[in-house]
Length: 518
Image (cartoon, rainbow, N blue to C red; front, side, top):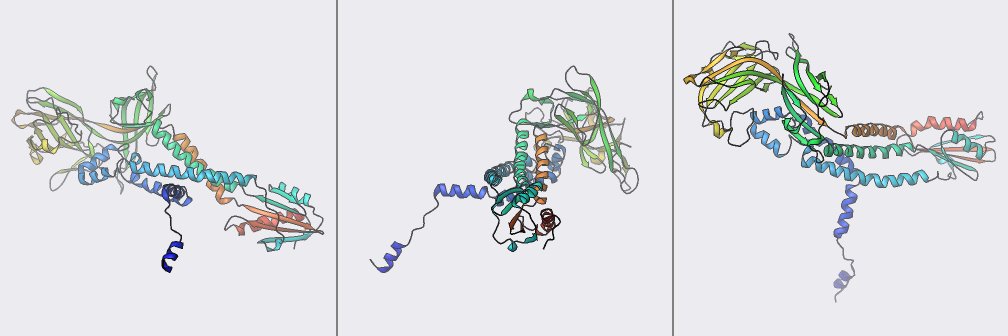
């Protein structure tokens, strides 16, 4: 063998980590404090889209409006689950990783903390004058008396031959550990609410009611452990809705306040009670909360078909197109009309005002001069009996719209319809009447058993972080020899030496009494 071959044979061969080694590395990386902080930041960052974009579980009407105005963008939002951020797979992944990382951080920190609690203060150094804080005085102070006075100042004390060691500030580590436990408790509370809670959305028109059953919801999101029997059996009727707006000035039309007047029945057979539902003042019944989310208009229409029969009559909730003026788009579908089904695309103007160049707009969100513009009237098969689901805010899918026969379009419909006015359809196809105006409200009904634990965990985390920031870990030593007492001090918290100087002076005064300190 050559010399180079012998040298290569002597060199140690590098071995791979192997599956077990990679698992250990992955666990240590995941449970490190750096990873926990990164995940906590990602958890907060991931919540931002849920605040900026409307969520299906809270504002389904606004989600529908985005699909109507920008369908391409809405599809991309939906691909990344941005309309359901808090139930998305990527948000759940961050949640579970943070949960695991916190557990991995807490367990070793708890063991270290318990060992610290049992450990006595270290013995006094030989030369106390080298410590950052030092003082000396003459007197007859004994080790026992020094220990007694330090205990009186709530120090943990250890005495030896001619010296006393004292330490306090353990609440700093307690606060640090409690903060991490509270964060873990917060995640657990969120998980409990997701598993054992439910939430749903419903739109209610004035004069209509709601019973807390699964079938009554427009959108219902139960936890895995929730069934139909889990729902609280309450009901209510929306007797009236009132909204007030700013009149005049730069902020004319700005919404000031709105409230819904309900007649509530807490349980079957219970007496009816009145309740005024306001924003951020939910109706609470045995842990189930009903929140007022939004409102809009539901004009009342009567449609007479070509045979002279009333084929439809009632309020139609309209989708808000312009929030400042509450200009809304309405869709009326009349599948029972004869001899052909009828459909209408309408625009509701709460306070209609003509424009100089023609046309009408709404100048105020309140229903001062309510009128309805007929954008289009159609006859034909609306596809409602095909079995395919359709949006109530869309007359028909594009492939069906192409087959409908337009009866009236745009300007051919004439001036907007005021309350009590009607539009005769050509060819004796029927008649559309605008008979009145009601308002609708959207509600979110939620039961979250983790709400109170989450609140307690958040409060605990806040208090704990305050403790860990304001409390200093510090040590004091005293050496007594030949009638001279020497005192040294050291803070274990970085950046708190200046704050400890004043406390150290007070400790020395307590030990020295009336003796001169040098």
